[in-house]
Image (cartoon, rainbow, N blue to C red; front, side, top):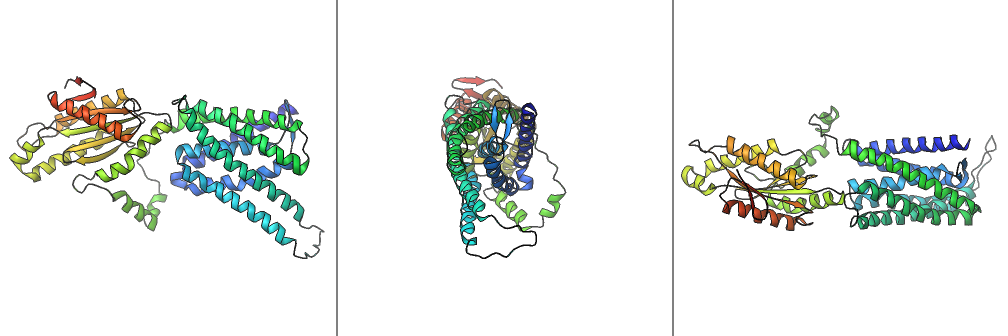
Length: 422
């Protein structure tokens, strides 16, 4: 029976993880509210099961409420942080905390009523509501501390395990769920006189759950999220969304910060978004490459053919950028004839290959009115090899762009003093 219960534990963990990660993965289509609501409504059941429902396992006695579902919730919060930010993580924690305080307050208020006898003789157990309410408040307080702790620990581990996000995920689970087990068991022991032996059994069950969730996280991170290719086909539901205010608002927001001539994002948008893109890539254990390119002898084009023809050349260059760069990359007009591309999840070697494709494509397809090829010089730098801030990496790429121009133009420079032949 104990082995069968352990199998059920594993099945429950897989089902919980699969459902919650599906809601998280498709949050752009379904809305983040579905994930947050599912996360919240489980809280009462987790607390109730942790208080009254225990089963025998090969290594002791434990509750699936605490070992499977609460452990899963904390690790879901870490995954939410990895894909969103700390501000988003605060929302469900504050909501749970306030909701549980409200539960306790209502339980106290209900005692002032004089309830009538129901035909079946059933009646509300107000003492149970108060007891569960205070346990839920304490559990949510621990969850708040756990959430802060797991994020801080994950970031701190990044100094030593920068690209080992799966190991960081597992270590964070082990450490914070150990802390949580100490805190929550203390409340159970005080309110419900749960024996001390349950502490160690519950701790072992939580560590077992962390191993399962880490394996599932590895599958999701390596084979699903990183391997996912964004679809260019909009679902039929989006046709109806086009008629809503939110769709129009998002469209207006998307067009804000666009360069009027080329249609790519402008410098102000770059200064706002590029640092975030670099920071998010590094936080997830990935590299990010910055490519800066400049049209060679562009002033001559304006002087010989006029600014209108020069504008057409710039439009042609941005069109080629759009065909070569990927959907996850972001292009900005840096100023004049200079453009900057931010390429997340791209190492330096891949960034150099991408830059060379850009250089070759522009040189072979963009022409001046008299049929001469338009060429570009390109500088490439990568975070964190060339720095961890966007300003530092952009400065390194700009210095290499200068070397490319000084070295004869129509070339890519990815290292100081090293010019890649065109």
